[in-house]
Amino acid sequence: MAANSSPLTSNPHLTAWVDAMARMAKPDRIYWCDGSEGEKKRLTDEAVAQGVLVPLNPKKRPGCHYHRSNPSDVARVEHLTFICTPTKEQAGPTNNWMAPDEAYKKLGAIYDGAMKGRTMYVVPYIMGPNDSPFSKVGIELTDSVYVALNMRMMARMGKVALDRLGDAPDFNKGMHSVADCHPDRRFICHFPQDNAIWSVGSGYGGNALLGKKCLALRIASYLARSEGWLAEHMLILEAESPQGEVSYVAAAFPSACGKTNFAMLIPPAAFPGWKIRTVGDDIAWMRVGADGRLWAVNPEFGYFGVAPGTNYKTNPNAMRSVEKDSLFTNVALTPDMDVWWEGMDGAVPETLTDWKGHPWKKGSAEKAAHPNSRFTAPMDNNPALSRFAHDPQGVPISALIFGGRRSTTVPLVMQSFNWTHGVYLGSTMGSETTAAATGAVGVVRRDPMAMLPFIGYDAGSYLQHWLDMQSRIPLPPKVFLVNWFRKGADGKFLWPGYGDNMRVLKWILDRCQGRVGAQETLLGWTPREGDLDLRGLDAPAETAAAATRIDLAEWETELESQAAWFQSLGKTLPVQLEMQRQMLLAAVKGARRVAAK
Ligand code: OXD
Ligand code: MN
Image 1 (cartoon, rainbow, N blue to C red):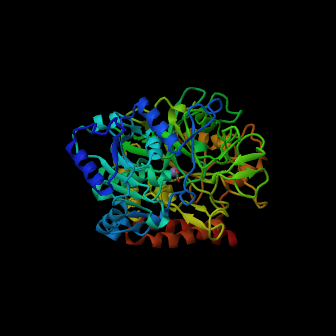
Image 2: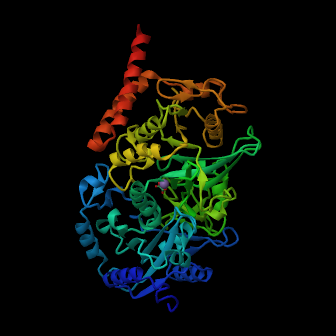
């Protein structure tokens, strides 16, 4: 490869670091990515020639490619993900910790010569809009052409990042090698104090696309605390009412709770004139604006979404986003070289090639697509992209929403009494384990702000930072908790979800404007009968009542069970949060005592 083998920059900090990493990994070639269209074509042709990518049927999926990963490398590996702060206490009880020296030594030994016979791609990128004060520059060095091509979709990549960086030393140093892709030599290490990430042994998105979870959440959350802002696992959506009022909300849900679907929601027929547009589907960086409000940007440039379950009914905008120029990983292939996954529209094909490359027949007990198979699509493909998605100033946030997957206890929607109570609701949110994961079913896994795997430092200090933000935001957003997954006595979901979540969103937006009623319960503000707009809802009238109900006996159990979670966070747990829990518990116990008399 002749093109771009010499540095596209004279930045001495950058060239010295690239040289040092190359001396360690010993690639045959170094290639500096410029982000051009010509380069995209060249790298894609190269990937196709190596068998890393397979072109899909150009009539059905123009510009699209397919990738099959190593079958042992299909998901994020939380048990192999480390925060390498100088002390273990700085990483806190919810993270794996490795001493920085030990991590550099251990991974250095794996990197040593790992790129022999390979090309090292230098991938400069910006997380955030090009000219935004929010944005951060990262450089990823990788021996995977698949990673380089994914990065150009997921971040603003190439010369644009080198131009922004100029001669400054201020860039994230991301080193990545698939090495021999063996689980025994797989580590994802973060060095927040060095603004560095070393990832080895995995080519999977969340482990290998270093701009996403590693930089935009783990490292950014650490930087955000010292710089006074928030880096969160949140979608950002724009809602426009029929009267033309435009508002923005940011919402945190654990992985696999329908975040991309909510970010691309289609309002039900009973809500004519409402338009929902996407700013981001996974990550929000939020700063206090000059006007005292909280402003958010989506640092990403594309979507890295879970394919199974996505169809033209559940998420038409995601389906349209992947109609062209997209990359598919570990889905199934149809005989005419289109993609397929469980839950796609239409009849199940008679035969397919499954995600491992084996022939597959309709009715097979095996899944054809891996449950965590993914699409990568440029966000500009989204027909409902907000016109502010690339705005350097971001969008002003009216409401923050936290949500988990709970079959009992947590109502459809609840507004917090104040900021501290809102932070408490976020800090105790969680999801029940499902049969899809190993271990007991129905156990609540606490996942504060949906950030458990992504907080780049001690979790108690992270929650303190959230509390401290109150004094920094003169006009803070209102905070809400939602739960689309509550079940009735018959074990069926009480709430239809998907587009009907618009009804909940409308209540939230109206609450932000003081336009709709609510009832003050012991646990927070919930909609009274008639407050939620249920016109045209295809569900019995009792549904909303059952979904929004507060059951004090369930809450007593819930509040008691939160004690162990808070205790597990150790001495940095903010005292206000434990006091909130105790105040609510005392109130619930008191009310139950009165009721029992
Ligand atoms: C996740 C993801 O796992 O966005 O949260 O991929
Ligand atoms: Mn995510």
